[in-house]
Image: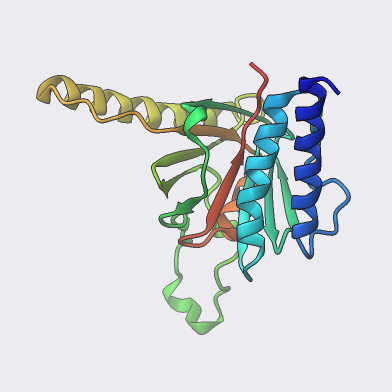
Length: 218
């Protein structure tokens, strides 16, 4: 057997063995849209499964941001609990995203106004109190920005970009004034519908593990 087919056969075998290690992963398509003829895609799938096996062995909820399948998967014990479609995404320094990231803190609530005359009968915090645009910071260093769609919510997108550009201007001004430029960190921009963004914010907890499935496509 030639060297290239042998490497592919070995990689597929490792993937199958890894899938068996997920004791409760009963979905037939754990790694969707996997191109078995692409060595880079196979290597990425092996890396992802190796990280996920460690997370699935413990009773915890974790998140997989799948840039190949354009989806955010909320999982537990290897089982997909919830799927949030990603409309579009862009990333920088994606080659550095090769480990499990821990969320530093969950997004802040969009707290509703409390009516003093309402007493104790006021409704508790719900999904509607979750933000639809927010930024997540991780350890090791990673920034994930959840942003609105320009097609569906133009004015919300413009307001979001305005805040983003203003923050960049202040950051650039400080850099020019001090002469010190902080090191670049991996960042990921995800476009979700407001409902899906709120669902993600509702599901996250401090120190929650996140994995990124990278794409080998340009």
